[in-house]
Length: 141
Image 1 (cartoon, rainbow, N blue to C red):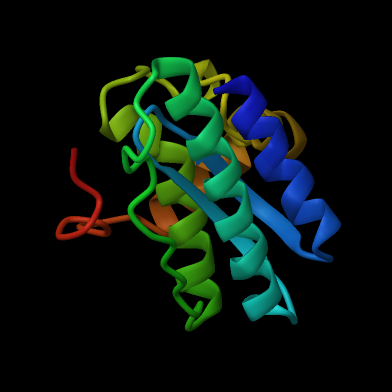
Image 2: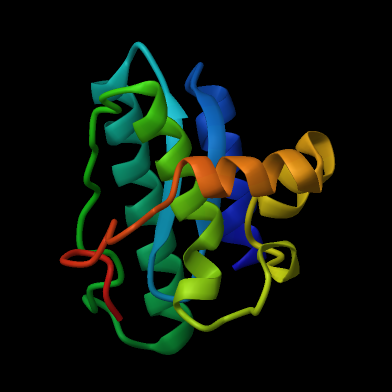
């Protein structure tokens, strides 16, 4: 996962995208990205998915196995939506039971965000912009 996490972050920085939050889990990943070139970014994500699928399937001797299902994009509708999505992404490893606290997940921007923003401000944002039932119908194991 560390190689994929690094490749994903490199992809976003190379696509003139602003990467606001990200996390990588064993079976999916999330990123909050700002870009003027969404179609080019999605094409690059597709190439990364193809490259990593080919590598992993070769390592496992399972050519043709589907590693990635799709890439979905959602337009951020408001400032409150932005903050709630960022909270959701940072909380995702906790939601899926991989860690107990955001900062424990290595493959995430959460620890850096906590360090840069400060715990009190992060807690304020968590209370003010709750994730509620975000992902209930589409982010399942």
